[in-house]
Length: 46
Image 1 (cartoon, rainbow, N blue to C red):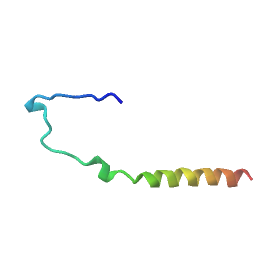
Image 2 (cartoon, rainbow, N blue to C red):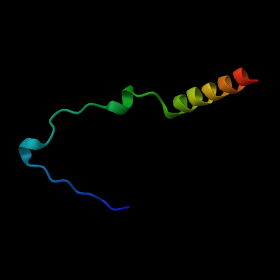
Image 3 (cartoon, rainbow, N blue to C red):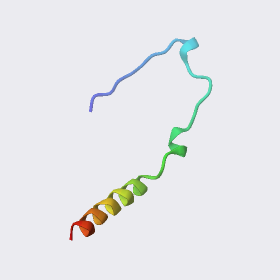
Image 4 (spheres, helix red, strand yellow):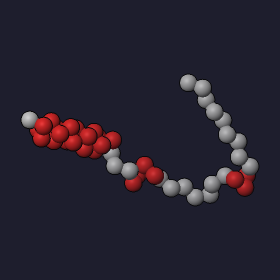
């Protein structure tokens, strides 16, 4: 994998950070929802 380096001027460096990952659902939740949808579609078609 090729790495990328970004250089910022001192004025462009963020002074505040926001932890976006803290507000996202856990990865297993998406898997659970997708699996549930697949199971519902299979049971409806039978």
